[in-house]
Amino acid sequence: MRKHRTEGQLSGAGYSEGAEMDIATHPVLLRSPVAPSPTTAVPYMSVKCIDVRKNHHKTKWLMPWGPNHCEKLKDFDEAVSRQIEANDIVFAVHIPLPSKEMSPWFQFMLFIIQLDIAFKMDNDLKENAEITLDVSLAYRDDMFDDWEEIAHAVEIRKLKCTFGSPKTLDSEGRHYDCDFLPFMEIGSVAHKYYLINIRLPVNERKGINVGIGEIKDIRLVGIHQNGGFTKVWFAMKTFLTPSILIIMVWYWRRITLMTRAPVLLEKVIFALGISMTFINIPVEWFSIGFDWTWMLLFGDIRQGIFYAMLLSFWIIFCGEHMMDQNERNRLSGYWKQVGPIAVGSFCLFIFDMCERGVQLKNPFYSIWTTEVGTELAMAFIIVAGICLCLYFLFLCFMVFQVFRNISGKQSSLPAMSKARRLHYEGLIFRFKFLMLITLACAAMTVIFFIVSQVTEGHWKWGDITIEVNSAFFTGIYGMWNLYVFALMFLYAPSHKNYGEDQSNGDLGVNSGEELQLTTTITHVDGPTEVYKLARKEAQE
Image (cartoon, rainbow, N blue to C red; front, side, top):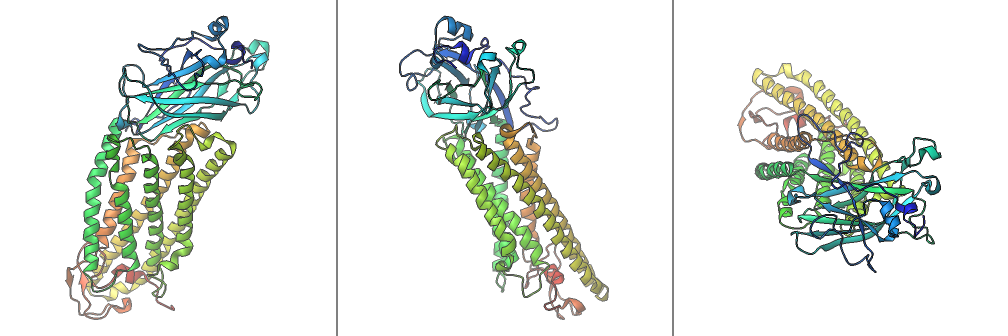
């Protein structure tokens, strides 16, 4: 590229204000016919502005349209004829489009960038070419206010382009097929208007923006959360928070009324309720009035804590119903299973801090921009998916062991009285049903985690365009709450009992022991009757 020769650097096509991208060619979202998408994608075409002032990198903001719009270039042929250097051209994008406003209900903004690069024999795109972007972001809340800077950075992006035709003179002017590149992410939308100025600084001596081909135009796609989905999401959280909180307080009160100390199973159910309440609390309401850019990171941390607690609970829940009396009721007995979950959750936190933590200071940063970062991120998603699938298979094996253990003890039921037999048959049926619901919940959680990771990353590493619609998001979230609610209800000690004078034989329950006649499965003076029924005899 020549510093003083614009045609060989940024040769271009005419500007088309508000031109839309071909969504069919570059699918942004696969919309569901049943439920709307939680997000909306808006295409933007940059405007080529002229900035011939000295020290222009730090002062004036260039507007693509409006009363104080910049001096525009129709195309790069005009820049050549007017002897305008590449360093004096600024690509300007105003967010949102004319006659629209951004809203705090949009929650976040994610932008990806695509470069229109044409083939030319004397200015070919080099292999593994990197482009340097000098980018600035500003905001204002009134069309006549001055722009206030949010961030400025110089970022490098590796171009990933292919050319489907032979590189001959006849192919000159044809465009490369270039992948979308990560550009910017902000965790709040607190202002009405945003402005992006992009410069492509050229320095032949340092090799900056040399060998990047003929850049015709710069396109952006802005993705934000739908305001309607945000309101539904907030309403769900506002309703579910007191529901889980009330059942959690009621559950723990029933346990503290017992003459015995809480067992491990009851403690982890209560801990699961706390983690569910933590993720339920609708602190997002504050994002409507405050510019809290850390909300995305905070949401990831809350969800990570819940994932860790849920995965640990399922291991302990199944283990407590299959261990013998000497091993159960000790958290240390599960360190081999819970330890890797804790380590994995910590790695997930570090991975998130490496991207969204840095984006709190520099919204243009992305871990996907480097080859090492991309490989690490891809490896994390793949390994996490494989580990979750193996975890689910292990959980299925544990549930099978519990079912086999209970089935072996059911041989003693015919020797009981009719009332006691029906009582235990009902308990066993409810317990088996709960275990199957647990497996279904685990399967949906694994699917949700994998699909959400693929959806979050598909802009950055390929053509996969799996879409998670609002029904899936709200359905999984509601399923978690219903599951936690059911656990605390079923495992809360009941005080409704009846006496039984007949011994229950092999179950080892003494004559005259009081048993409950409620829908719960927990005994007034013991952890759970199924818990007793399922256990292995010590030294069996």
